[in-house]
Amino acid sequence: MNRQKSLSISSENTNPNSSNSTIPNQNGTIFFVTFNFTNCVIGAGIIGTANAMKEYGYLISVLLLVCCALLTKKSLDDLISLQIDKNLELSMGAQFNSNSSLDYAVLETVPDTPSAQRGKISNYESLGFAAFGQAGKLAVIVSKLTYAWGCLVAYTVVLKNNMPSALTDQFCDDESSSSSGLICSFMEDERMFTLLLCTVVVLPLCLLRSLDSLAKFGVLSILSVVFITFIVLIERIANPAGYQPMEFPQHSILEDLIEVKGGVISSLGTFVFAFVSQHCSHLAFDTLNEKTLENWKKVTRNSVSIALSLVLVVGTTVYITFWDLTPSDMFHCYPPNSEEIDFARVLLAFTMMMSFPLPFFTCREMIIDVGYVILGSGVNEDDQLLGSLAQAPSPSEDNFLEKLISDADAIISRESIGAAPTTTNTNTNATNQPTGMAKYLLVSAYSNSNSNSNNDTASSNSSSSNSNAENRQLKPFYHVSLTIAIWAAAVGLALEAPSLGSVLDLVGCISGSFIAFILPSMFEVKLRGRWVGKNVFMFAVGVSITVLGSVFSFMKIVDEVRDGGEGGGGDCGAGD
Image 1 (cartoon, rainbow, N blue to C red):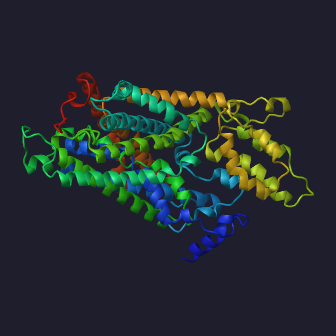
Image 2 (image 1 turned 180 degrees about the horizontal axis):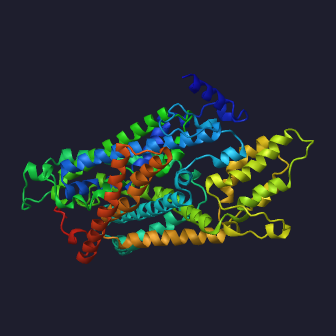
Image 3 (image 1 turned 60 degrees about the horizontal axis):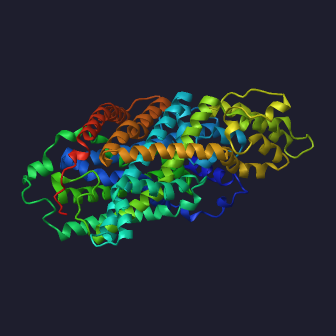
């Protein structure tokens, strides 16, 4: 307990120039972080849960959802626990404790010096490097890249399945005028209308370089899920018999609720997809005012519980409404011309468009990270450090030794974050010709280091994070080209995807299980040097889902493409 208090006091005095050290940020409370992180947990997976219940069987689906939620909670806690412990090792110069987690640790104990901050674990990728070097870092990057790209495809499929049909239901009829008839005919073409929306609305959002202007839509996303939950509940109460046609075979309670059905393996990815949020965990943890493992566990407990509750309520309600006719996109089988349902569909589609840039930015960032791994950083980081040494402080300056040691230690610490080896280049002209990733970047790091060389240490430290963010921005041509390439690949595949369920299953099985289960368990074992039952179980679950689930999901997609769509495009029985 005494050690905890001393760490907390030390963290408060780490950066006296920081405004956050005296004025807590209300957005960093457990309540607000829980709200924001819940938005990361809940995604398009909630829309396809009811269909997975139909494929699995209801009772086994509920059990698997609870199991996925519990494993997600454990992996989220493990990732942050490892981050805290490794950063304490860095700050205290102590041997990493492989037998216990320092649950009282405060992340701000890492000194506010260039070497410590460069070695500090602040994201999933740096944790992967701490565990397995470049291989671990690259595994995280590839997993996040494929998952983010899968999210883009899923969001576009949701948009395609809901926006065109909802608008035509409300604004188009047989008595439409010739001009409106042309518009309605265009909207009835789901692919073309979706392509138009993605081009006019989504693509400009993806071309942004910052997500600051879209932060407010996080609230809308949560509210829309709550509204959708309310709407499906009202629809079920208003139609207690459901929407199955009378001629459809009736089943017993055993068949509808208890029986385990044949799709149990192929639909595993949907349940994983519904909770994957590990890629956002470090960012969410960093927004807490008091960065303790105890507070983080409260956030994960609240967020995962809220997400699980909403998934179960929506999935159960839709499943008992349509039973064996439940589609992968839950709104597909509701009767047309229902104002409540159509409004919910429009709101859902709009939310998907506003949420599209979130995984898109991650996808673009991961591609840039791959570039760093393959091409090296060039002058973007290495020459910046060399430049700072070339302009070493004068012995007459204040804190001369501290500044000199800090700059030298910064270069030594480059190895701790997996950056490309620094090559000394004394040729002044060579520094004006960037190499590696630096030649594709908008801002020259070396020029930044020169322009800031006369600033005092406090100003340099306070602006370091902003400078690093700017240095990772691509030049306009490369920024636009990469953005359009990612956008076109995701939208093009989504327009041809047979169903939302197929996308959720495949993405959840391949990349979701890696991010959520396999990598966290491997990092835990590597960094703590021990196997425990929970880690073994989580690793086994992740591998099983990846191998078996991916094979069956791919076979399911092949069958759907061959049959011309989900289930061969059968009738929902909801009426016309």
